Image (cartoon, rainbow, N blue to C red):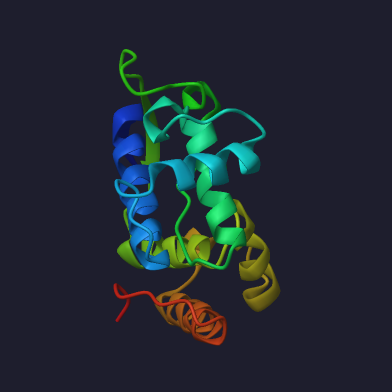
Length: 166
């Protein structure tokens, strides 16, 4: 049975903020020193006038992260439920419920799968191809280990640096 967890729009905003500022530092152009540069870049990417990151909706910030990924940065782009996409900083906080698996290995597999750039729901296709089983929750511990090793191999092959797998 999945665990229910409540997540708010402001939590996603903070997560996106960390990702964006990490990207700015990776590129070597800090946001606070070069705000106009980033505003121009995101204005072109989003086809709208961008004054700063604070004025963007969660969806627009998501598109900005996606643009940085297209430039070659390896970034996690958190999923945003449709109800929260229009939320902006300063508005009343909105929450939604997400379900998580109890099995930590399944959670790890899904997180690494997302790091590869795939939709979380697409992991079932890999499970079906590898094991002829319809759902990841039905895999044995040995099969989960095999699946995890396959995903780790793909991560290494794509040169994605992840520090939280063993």
